Picture 1 (cartoon, rainbow, N blue to C red):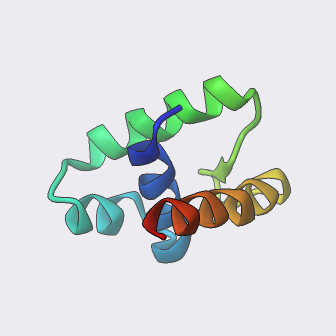
Picture 2: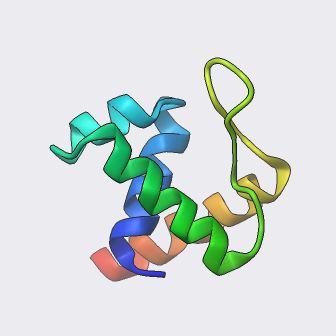
Length: 77
């Protein structure tokens, strides 16, 4: 897990879109999707429900999202 993956996850959660998150970071949608998948593999839980449109954050994803925001905020301080 790295800070970029946390940033990408927060952006996907905020936008409910891999594409819009990718645009924010000037990356491809595929690159963002791959990074989120790697993050999910690292933490061992599904963070994003890809079956819904727009995509949504899973219940465990909401817990992780709070922590990710906290970590990123502390890193900015």
